Image (cartoon, rainbow, N blue to C red; front, side, top):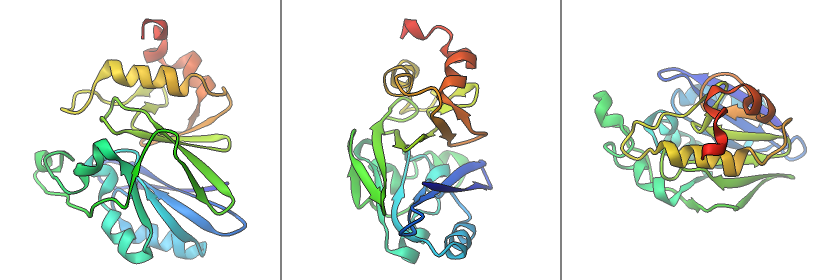
Length: 211
């Protein structure tokens, strides 16, 4: 699996484009804004977008959904607990920022354990709530896309109406810390890391046995 990445303006969201080298099928993960930049990268590599995968429904991660959907005809996928955020500016928090981000309804409601194919590559959807009720991570061969669940030396915010710190830490413990140390973590913001690095150096995980 090859992975292209963009840091999108506004909230510095990481948008990832994992793709199959053989078929050039890809997914666009969290197209938060600046859809034209995503379009240029897709066209540069002659990629065929099969899915728009959303780690969660907060406004900074969904801003380019409709543009990419209309451009490519790809399927929009989000967990059912965050699906309403695509069309509700209060639930996706954009109304609190003085603007209203409204996209289009999802085509696929993700469930824990669902496997999505992009060419010969596969991504397994993991329900990892805490930052939002429907937060998802996507596990591939040697990589995991964690959205705003786990960052390098930090974890996602839990001060939003749909967030819960204990639930988030439980997701990290049960879904991420059981994975291989050399698995590369592609977070929703900031730099790449690994499961092993976070297991040993992330200060939020020092007392993991308490969760």
